[in-house]
Length: 253
Image (cartoon, rainbow, N blue to C red; front, side):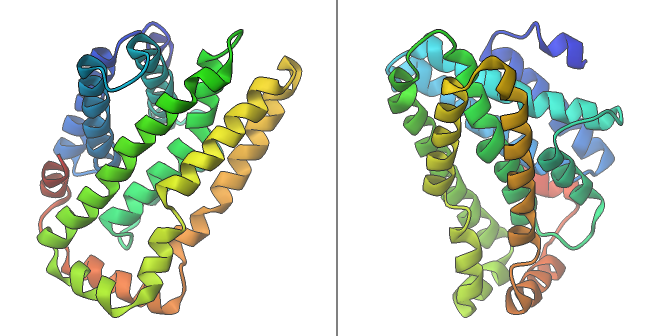
């Protein structure tokens, strides 16, 4: 499957593959489906944006979206086959075997690996031999879509699990925890990394990506261990989550 991914060229193909992951996750009751469901929604919105003229350059945006998504899909299938993947994605997927993380933490783990590492790599990749600065406006627009969905998901989860809404109000620690993963910070960091890659000699790219991967993986502690008060609050939320994993995946869709 990882080899087959190299042949993928369109957003429609990405959407189909994400649907397979979602269906497999629902069938097997696996938390991996949480991020896949959110990501499919993002991908569909990007497709709609391309078709409606939201982006400056639709074909280039599809190219970016496909390169971006491939990094997630390659990591997913490599992990499934017990093959080597990035440290940040391995930490994300390892977490799916643990009971305590709430749905929002699973999503933040995926966003951490995908935006803070993969987005910059994908942007630099499709800009080889071109002026990276030409991409910046559309790069920011894709993050507008991501940011809007984060707020939607938080609202949806609050509606599904009422305890989340009250606990978010009760402790500012949770707010700090979410602010640390604001889309603006992630966007700015990803763009800075893309610029670094675009200016680097080819023989340094692998080392730069590896160093960035380790830094991104180190952010995991902010998601999983945001302080004693926040951890206590998150455990209350986790206990109050209703429904099976497959039902939660459906609600995210």
